[in-house]
Image (cartoon, rainbow, N blue to C red; front, side, top):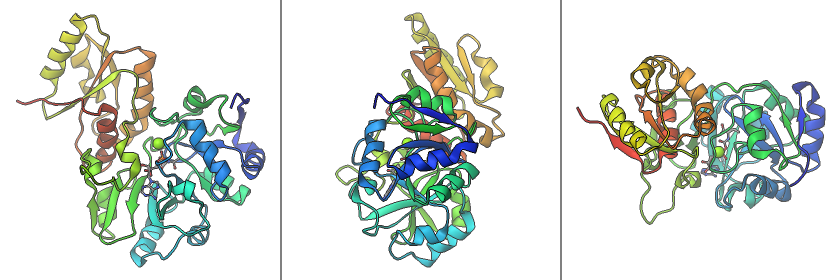
Length: 344
Ligand code: TXA
Ligand code: MG
């Protein structure tokens, strides 16, 4: 730390690969969000990822590979149905939790006997993995607890001076992180919704949804995906998620109460609904009929809430089908316990 972070262009991947081979951390774009990569086979390099992010040691990382052969070399026995998922959805925003072999140092998986792996589809990510010749352990390239970065500027805002380099590949595509599926037992279990939807997974095999996806952790038993127990994706403002079909009256009433106490109030809602809230700062999410647009905007808007120095941010909920499941999962996590129901 206290190092100078070098900004590289996608034409300079040789240099990024050399840093990775030397055991340094390099941020790079994927089709979901920016990742902070290091050699997954080098325990010390991986430890420096945790240090740079301030990430709790018990939250395991995803290993990024560029081919199925590279994946199969690192994991134990793979269920044939997991092979089907690989064939159907890789490269792409799907992470599979598989048995770990001794090739992967325990620090990568926070001591679990499993390892999460994916093949990203972003050409810069794929090329970087190829050039380095290494599987890359990479969490999202944000400070722990902050919204995931969808631009190089977001990464630098959090990690400038804490990492060796970043490859600036412009804005990422999906905007939310990959879908995480535990494939170590049948039925497979959805641990984190993402770009590959539950409906798409179900076309291949029945998939059970872990209760943690809806913010319900089983008291007394450890979560299947350790990342789920942390409040996450949070701007400095208090995020209040408003569930129910008719949020408008409730948000206006609550917002006015806060404003009367001198707080700066913002509302994040589908673009079509924003005119309702013109007395507050509005953060238009994108069209209600285009969940892809909303997921691409989500983390940028949570960061904008900070730039606007909001004290409280009300967020309209979305339908939890398709990509809406991933968006709502992130909003629940940003809100923590601040979830209210707007009844008719
Ligand atoms: O799209 C993504 O997945 C991005 C890009 C950079 O690839 N990465 C990402 O990593 O979101 P991260 O570290 O922010 O989230 C990894 C999630 C966490 O919720 C973690 O608990 C879970 O995956 N995870 C990792 N290894 C696991 C394992 N062995 N068992 C269960 N959950 C695991
Ligand atoms: Mg993350």
